[in-house]
Image 1 (cartoon, rainbow, N blue to C red):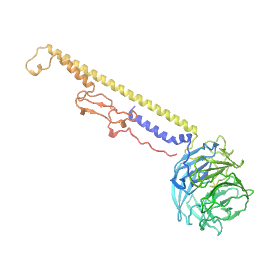
Image 2: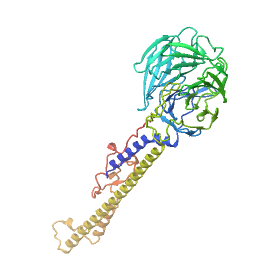
Image 3: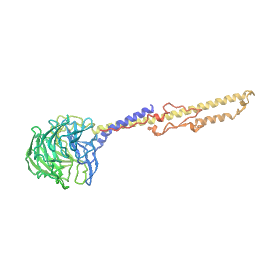
Image 4: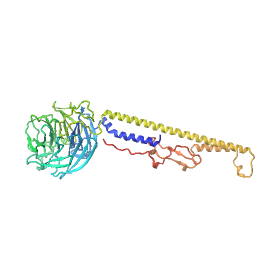
Length: 526
């Protein structure tokens, strides 16, 4: 088997294994780098987080471009959540994301004042990003959270002057004016779509145009996309205090709204980890168990559980696994339990007709479409074992190949030496025959060196030549260094004599300049 073919096979194996490495790594467990102020969105059975920054002592240290998906269709301990690494997106912070109702596209919006959004679309099935700016005729502002209407797929921004409505299919904006004194505290507020009420809910945030101020109370403003009307949801119980930079999530059936953490002062570094639950049917607020302060986090409600990850505690980025609050038990728990509408037999890549049609804070429905490249951990392990076995087989084949080449070289050398000895003996026999015949004194040079010791001298010359003792160092040629023989890791010495040529196969001598033994290993992204 030619060396070039062996190395080509090895290259193919290495490239194939690089494609499978993301899934093998997923089987071993992947976790995103800790970040805050990231974009997040729910699409089907996954919570996606993208971008964000890492801070220590309130100083930003790094900006992330990572995209990870957390599987919500299977149960897991908070110490070992099933994250899945996907293709990196744009590096950004303080931006927001949504998913389309079919769960096939994620869209992030990064404001570029005064009137442009840097929009990025992620194709869930292809695991690819497409970047494009979109211009908004309304004044753009940081801290405006977009919300998707799952019935139409339109994306709503409570803009500075209007309700800005974006069609992701056509990239066209339309506008509805916001009445005075409505949605004034909407910057860095919470916003969700409630499928039961068919409204977009906002709570908290900064007052626009009034530097460093909150409203005196926190309340839920509602906007109906179908009727283009605004209203305030009247509630009772123990409501949250005014805040910004909190996380707000709604259950899939629209029956529960959660507000967690946030910034309690518009001017002072005062943060909270308080937890509030609204029963939408009764319109009553109650408190859950508070944790340490947290802002800039990702969160979602799945079934009867609230899941949050990442964020900032007032001093540095929060590290560690997701946290889970059981809304039935009214307490924080150490295990996430997948809802019953996710069948235990459901595998990534399958669709389940039992999945609910409710929406989350991004307004997406909850089907079971997986991220691109998703495989079960056992499948990844099996594929890794197969690739490892093939690679080992190829290595053994290379070893036997070079051992066979060595044996062939030794056989050729022995054959050459035998031929040289036979030739020397034949010459000696001729000389002995000539010595027995009468000498003719016509040419005096025929009388020179025809003694009985001539044969041993010729025999010794043949032995030296066969033993690779060249007459001139210039006759020694080396076809290449170890880089030309990556499988063997060494450089065979090919020594040639002008009188006695070495017999070798054509594949042994190669031009290093035309070597086909090197290759570039390509990178693959999942």
